[in-house]
Length: 512
Ligand SMILES: *[C@@H]1O[C@H](CO)[C@@H](O)[C@H](O)[C@H]1NC(C)=O
Ligand SMILES: *[C@@H]1O[C@H](CO)[C@@H](O)[C@H](O)[C@H]1NC(C)=O
Ligand SMILES: *[C@@H]1O[C@H](CO)[C@@H](O)[C@H](O)[C@H]1NC(C)=O
Ligand SMILES: *[C@@H]1O[C@H](CO)[C@@H](O)[C@H](O)[C@H]1NC(C)=O
Ligand SMILES: *[C@@H]1O[C@H](CO)[C@@H](O)[C@H](O)[C@H]1NC(C)=O
Image (cartoon, rainbow, N blue to C red; front, side):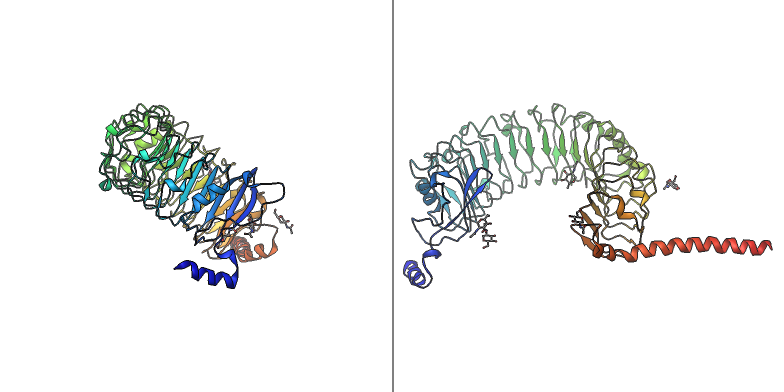
């Protein structure tokens, strides 16, 4: 039915409508075909002009947008004999099967990505549909509609399997998710993030050499040890965004190489004090957004290797912060710390001293005051975020020691005055964000001292209500927008001076 209509259309507007056309480009050293048309009808031609000196066998990658044609994969593989990567976005096909990978035509393919399409099946159970693709290493089917999978339908050469944002749900499985045996012996990366997995009882991890495992954003309430016993090589493990309620001693105890662990956004109330005792290489831990209320200091004492700790929004109570502070200070390697969204009260309780910190977030903590010493030990600090607090004043020497600062984010506070000398140490500042404060006075020389400011945000303030991205202090139109702030600063000073004068004059008069 469709073809005659298309033919009529084509009589009017040429063949271009149904023939996919490559826009050939060299990206780095790779010759790439960008296909930007929606391919509606079956065809065996690919249009476009290959540049002089190149041939079809030079094409190493095809990237398409909006490709709906069932036969696209076959078409592309037939045409480009040396193709290494095929990336299809919004692929419209419902399944991929053995006829898509023509025998003898898939030899060079290493990477297959089909994103945001309608794929709900890969071949038939235990039929390896990729048999013709003897080098394939990565399959990425992010954003499709797969509900089940069987590792028997995948190539044994696979190293990376990305099934993020599908509909994988153990209810659809009659047998184990990956089959009963370890059938992907070379798999190192597996993502099942963003599916509907509520139990792991049917998930038999397909590889003993997995280094990266992503189970984030599923519905897991527990993580049975039996499923992890073979995964002793894991380096990064993501379990954030599930429904876990506790971290038992055994969860990651079989993973001595673990470097990065994400447990954020669960329902965790307790962490066993020896949970990370055997993870002597752990450097990055995220336990944010859990209703922990308190963090047993013994938990952190076991992982003094940490360089990055995210404990934002763990409902920390003031009483539990003081002991925690001591442990935090013992984390001598810490470079990144986020303790935002915990109401610890006064800043004196806070006082983070880790000299190696590069990035500190203390937003949403109801802080109302800094002292001259608050950041005085943080001599390497590059990023500081203290948004959504009640800070009114920036003390004169607050930034005296933070000479490496690149990003200062201070949105949603109550700061009114910006003095040049207070910021004089931060020559390399790139981003300055005082959105939604009460700025009404800025010293005229304030911007002169920065050498590489790129982004300046002052929306929702009293004397200025604008963002400047990019920001150029040599731009007179930009500076004119700050004139009111500069004028207010000067008149505030002259009021002070005239007040002093008045007092003086009054005193002189009184004396007479
Ligand atoms: C081809 O791709 C290049 C690089 O992405 C782009 O600059 C150019 O506009 C494209 N041409 C057509 C006709 O789509
Ligand atoms: C492809 O088309 C989309 C919209 O139709 C456009 O936004 C995009 O820039 C195009 N890309 C190329 C590489 O021509
Ligand atoms: C500072 O923040 C930026 C933006 O979020 C980030 O890209 C950069 O890695 C951070 N720097 C450090 C040292 O963490
Ligand atoms: C910071 O130091 C300055 C100068 O020594 C002093 O005037 C000011 O009161 C101090 N501010 C705070 C909040 O300690
Ligand atoms: C202003 O500064 C920017 C970046 O520092 C520079 O690219 C630009 O040429 C300067 N403009 C003038 C008018 O000096």
